[in-house]
Length: 491
Image (cartoon, rainbow, N blue to C red; front, side, top):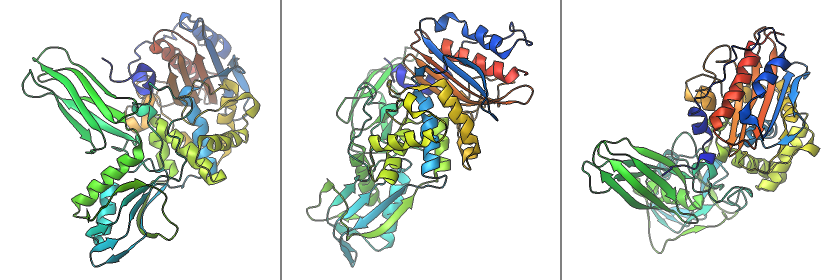
């Protein structure tokens, strides 16, 4: 039983890739074209389409291309476009804001009126933030609320999933629903998910122990596990039923076995955020009295602000977004750009902003098709030459250092430095040198970014492999061989 579908695990695919392609047999005096042609002459690419573009970072001169003008699916290399457009449109210091408001007034220790929790897209809200909101209300003398708890997620539209997301992806963290009011379980900031952990009980014959973080009644756990004797095999599956918040856990857990843990998306994250907020209020001794209810509707214009929280600036959010390839961040930023520029927090308007922005970065809009902000779509298309040109031209932007800092760095073990490249290209000259965004979907693998050659020349590259069959590790090994060849090349 698999915890995640393989096509949804960009990071895990790369971590488990153990194949290597030696470049020792390549003549170090060979031209760059000869070196890359030799690497790309590989049976694992047969039957697929591989687009490669290498350009001089300073001039944009095309140094090597193979199928560079063929439109290909970029997978998570789409996040390069989203991040650059967000920096250009929103700015490095842009912050998301969440507000707590009321349409009533406080008399004594009682708030007479409704309590509103208004989300404006922040994907970094944590349970601790809701606790702080509750403490802020308590600090204002509020102990009881005679009214309803209302969640306002109208900052964005009510379309939760991008148009091309497979239904089989949506129970998992890689396909979490997008809401303007949401919650993350930890500082990876996978908004709209809970962490489900399965740990062994002390004896066999019963069920394994299951915990959910943060604690919430919004999801229902169906524990169908079986504890087996020590030394027997562990086989645990954790998956939410489509269209509900019932999480089914099945399989065997041996006594003394290791924990299994999964980030599981919730259905309708607005209600999830409200449930955790209500628990935070209760823990601070604040109770709803009378015939209170939980609703979802817009905050009235005459409501007054009680407390609020602003997120980290965009330049800091880009670190988990790009290093860990966080799909939810890509989609939130897309909707936020639509909201800020066109006053509509939708995918359609957000993608318009991204397309307009990248056109200003040298990308020909007539040869690309954008369908989401994360790259999960199998219908997004861009040629490698266009992507590499964008990477060349954005170097002159004032925000470029924040952009480049957000990219994974080859072979750097620290998770928020190496990101999805921390177990790849672990030897010099590529280690610590290749700075690039990874990407993977079923049959798609990509790697695009920056590298310095042996003689100090700054180079931009984009690699996109489409329609391959077999192990993803065979393909990432080819990408890594190109990275090593570029890092070790002398012009």
